[in-house]
Image (cartoon, rainbow, N blue to C red; front, side, top):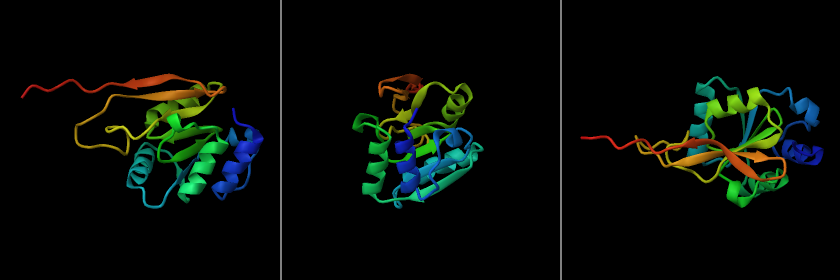
Length: 159
């Protein structure tokens, strides 16, 4: 999982009390770091709340947000517009609530989940019925990734 140093840096950056990895394991509130003007981040937070998650939001500068990503070893290829923490895992980008629940239920030895970039159709990035094909990735302890869930483009409708 994360080093105590990374968790402490994230906690300080988010303005919360620094927690040990053991204490983080029992935390069920999703803590989201985002920039104040990001509308899709707010829409993703609404998605989480609509799916029963308790969320605390920390508006930070772009510089602070980038520092959080660096502290958590989130690479540019894994990055999106917001970073969250829950139960010792990071959640990067527009990850669906059901995938977060699955992660928390299975508790894999991993750092977290990411939906890199901002794919259309992911939670918070809805644009009507349009949906890009995208993957939610599990970020392993060594930083490598594997597909956690593939999101396919819906089949074309006949008129």
